[in-house]
Image 1 (cartoon, one colour):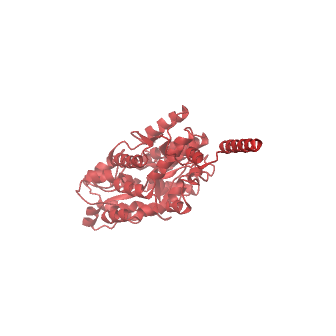
Image 2: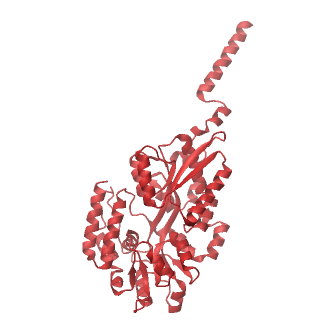
Length: 442
């Protein structure tokens, strides 16, 4: 009997050891939740650093409110918001932190930044988290607007989720247009005609106030029939090659005669807002994210409205703006799990609905756009619908890291062509060569 008892005891002990080594048992699985992508352990404490560029205004308060809500629901998770004064500063700080091997858990990133970070293995793929126990179902993934979810892919794999997304729209002084009997322009030909008609010869009013950028040039380029901006391997600019060169030149020339005649006022930085808010300009071109600032500056002096960007011979197009959310591989698994859980909260339908109402950004999920709260909001603020209505026309010229250099070169030469400092042909040649040089160097 004693031998049998010993056999049973030894067998039981061996069984327990084997189960322990294999991670068996429900309590062991619960305690090792950090090893499961995106799943949190309620008995652990987590800290997540989120680097962002919402240092002021409604963007700051909206993000802080949502973060507070998340931490109240998840008291074992501390979210540390690190706000920088601009996206340029954010990028510089991120580059330095990654180089030093001390990245934050997550950050706002543009597509070209993300590609650079992916190439250096600094970015964490979201695929395991999306497909994990705390991930997204197929229906939830389909709830994101396809163009925005696609924007978060790098080489066919999801590395980002859409967050503060915006598009360029046409701002207009509705009272002014009604007084002059001018309909909202649907095409660039109609816009050019309206700009001329609304301009006063004594210089007291311009039809359009414009701070030139690569983005409005890109929209014109696509609207006039332009194709890709870069070669398929991303090593060369092709917007200056035929047949794209024709569309590039039309984009450079479109507003140039109106600048020369005084109908378009070329400004720097955000000075177009001053012109528009004071009633000195009938139209302005900017992102929907400018809405809170414009609305505040106008202060009820007239009715501000937005419209989808006018179309060209090839249809409607608009530049897709705003950052995505990404996680970094240089932090431990537990921290990434918490970062994912917080990220998922920020892009939830309820959070997104609140965020849209508080800021100038667009809904990133269909359920948010169709929620009773946002439906009511858009009914009360019909001028905000231009952004969502533009969603299907959005595009990103390139995700290559060197495109940031291209942006600078294109903006500089586009401005020179508009102001007559360079011919459109010379401007196109310079920006094409400079962009190709940047791309070839990676």
